Length: 191
Length: 191
View (cartoon, each protein chain N blue to C red):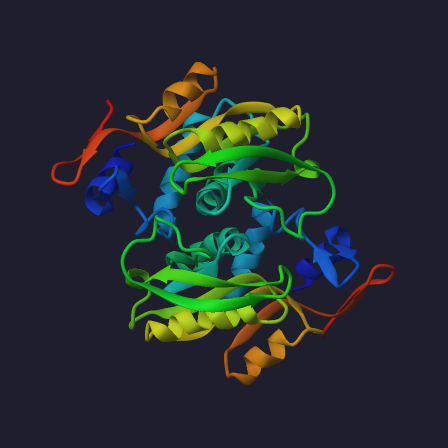
């Protein structure tokens, strides 16, 4: 998605350790008009998929998923990262190892919001090691729902998640795939 | 907002300890078409306020704020609940005591996304004890920005937050105010 690549080039900030900060428009401050273009592009790529629900994970996936959901005309469910008093009843859970934060956490979704009849599109902001996405796909599997695919805004193509997900046979659409990045020379995108 | 009260009556579940679960449409699964009606109503109530930015807090405020932002044509910034590696640089912070979770946590926003020139609308799903909202208002104050008001979907009118916020002189628009609730007889709304 050319508009996204341009925006990353213009407003993305590369930090040591392969960190790409896009928090001025994507995941801390959110440019809603820009998210609408992202949502339209996800719809274009999954137009054939008869999605019934979008699944994402707190916190930075939620805004992207909600705006995208307008184009699919479906509800959004977000997985929570910690058990809280506010989820009652039966839940599906999966463990996710976060390399960024150096810890393992549970992701949780109420069973009543994922059903066998659902065709699920997972949406998230980043794909790097793929652990969050694999965790979300396990929630879909546990519900007996169909995983139609995953829509990712930015894939770090030099990390193993993308290949792992594709090798699992999951339909993966990443709107920008970064091959390499460098504090001096910027991002190089996969063609 | 009549549509909201109807939806709470239809799909809200009242649990012991004054817990109102609206997670089938508002804050776990999100009915996006319904959130659009909520967003329009916030815009109607703050039409005169020349909002430049919406501020919310992760996680359940984000979807509501993003959909509402379409009607204001402004960006959304969400405060984070924990320091992460992904916020670099200078931040504004405030302490929030959560009665629901029985703990105190920091809320954090990057200084670069709240500016003196901003007229901020705070949006959140619930107002009960008002601690999160007061924390958010402190972030706005720390930035030297103007707090135009707060838009809340559901105010628990029998808890002290609403009165406290109004007594502070903050313009507060709650789309539904619950006077009392009971597992048998349901919710009574303030007129």
